[in-house]
Structures are given as structure tokens and as C-alpha cells.
Length: 115
Image 1 (spheres, helix red, strand yellow):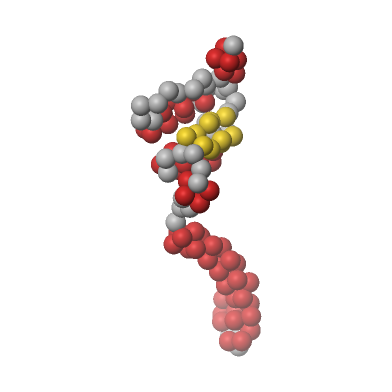
Image 2 (cartoon, helix red, strand yellow):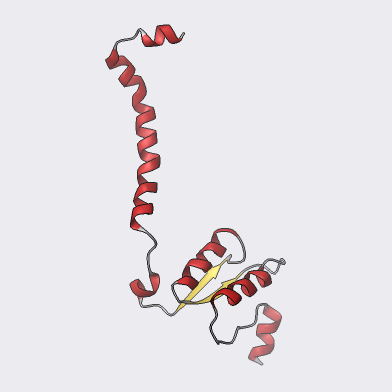
């Protein structure tokens, strides 16, 4: 089978390789662009002071919280009360808070703070 494939003329082999070349290019060029461009500084770009991150207790939302905290933004982390939110807020607070009050982390505490 390999001998038959290699016996084909070079233009036919190139034509057969085109989908793979296009796929590899379409996959790796955006990754290379993102790596070279770096992270956007949203604090500078939007002159922002606060960020609201939904789903900030795990996964992509947690990573977004980390990046925004590194940029110096105040972050409101919103997530389901499933045992991941409070440890995430505590870890973010320990890493990034410098002498500020930490707001309540669940709905009951927020309602009590407003009354």
C-alpha cells in the first residue's frame, strides 16, 4: 500500500497532502499569534477598576480571575455555592488582596450585609 502511494506523481501527492497542510496551518497559526501577542491588559484598555466574573470558582472562570487580579482589577467572583466558591475566593484573596475588605461570598451574607 505504501509503495503504491509513493509511486504516485508528486503533484498528486501534494494534492493529497493539501487538507492536512491546511488543517495544521489553521490550527497552529492562531495559537502562535496568541502566544506572541500576549495577554491584553484590560485595566489599561478599558480604564477599568472592577471586573465581574461569572463561573469564577473553577475552570476558565478561575483562570480569568487570576489574570484580572494580576492586572490589579477588583474582582467580583460569582459562582454556584457548591464548595468550590469559598476556597477560590480565599485563594484569590490570599494571593492578590492588599489591605482591603473582602466582600461576602454567598447570598445569605450579602443579604445580611445590605440590611
